[in-house]
Amino acid sequence: MPLVTTTEMFQKAYAGNYAVGAFNVNNMEIVQGIINAAKIQKAPLILQVSNGARKYASQVYLKHLVQAAVEDAPNIPIALHLDHGDSFEICKDCIDNGFTSVMIDASAHPLEENIRITKQVVEYAHTRGVVVEAELGKLAGVEDAVKVDAKDATYTDPDEAVRFVEETGCDSLAIAIGTSHGAFKFTGDPQLDFQRLETISNKLPDYPLVLHGASTVVPEFVELCNQYGGEIPGAKGVPEEMLAKSAKMGVCKINIDTDLRLAMTGTVRKALQENPSNFDPRKYLAPARDAIQEMVEHKMVNVLGCSNKI
Ligand code: G3H
Ligand code: 13P
Ligand code: ZN
Image (cartoon, rainbow, N blue to C red; front, side, top):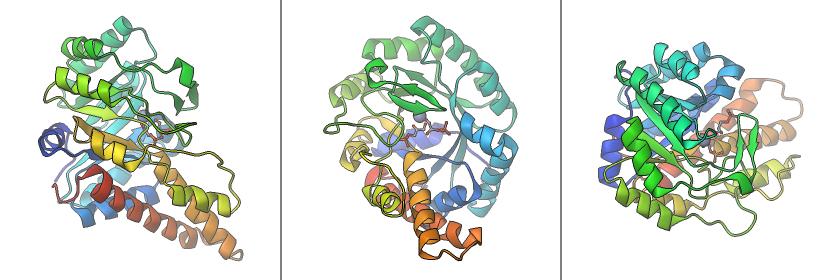
């Protein structure tokens, strides 16, 4: 099947109390690891491309890697999504170039400006059959080299969320309830504001919510990185059970990038150190691809609940 939008995926996820995984892709091995997992688990997929990914690999390569995934997995519904588009122009470029879903993240702007920019993107996207995710509230962490300190993070206001969705017509909404981007999400015990999530979800019935910064920061991969020469002390992610709980409370899309990076880096570090004479990238990237597949399968089955949902 051709690339799809997230509309049907989210309807099914909402009704079935599970979430679809949205995985950031930057190179071929990451795409293949994820797609191999989706094929085995028969899971719908969102492959997302950030601005940083577009700068690194260029949009045309990523678009065609995703197109290759579509051909490789003809039975899997796959959406190609722009992650954290921060302007109308970036969203327009992706809409004009075959993306089926875009995120306009104007959350750095004051509310009225966020509404204005989001509305502009929604109007352009909807007339072209593309769906739009927007963001209200501010997550802490690192995004495209912009660091938001925890003290500057703002949780999503439930009443503002209702107004925002009504006025902009966005198809899904990313909310801030305590998750953050990157590998260092909590200094103390992990905590999410489930009360806030419940209130938002009740005020927006049948409406798909999105959780960014939702990597679990898989401890095995952090350990692997550290064991083989890396230095990632104090890394901590969102516990699996918290993500599984949010998937039953209206969260239909769960974003994962950091865990892919850790899986790849840890595995490559190990492969290179264990075999210092190896200079064939295929020999250290193949285990990284396998590690990604295994990790993504685990998430599909045990965290997202999206396996066997195609
Ligand atoms: O939200 C941020 C994602 O992890 C993408 O990160 O902008 O470094 O590609 P990136
Ligand atoms: P993580 O950094 O937790 O993987 O979050 C990724 C994300 O939200 C991409 O938009
Ligand atoms: Zn994000």
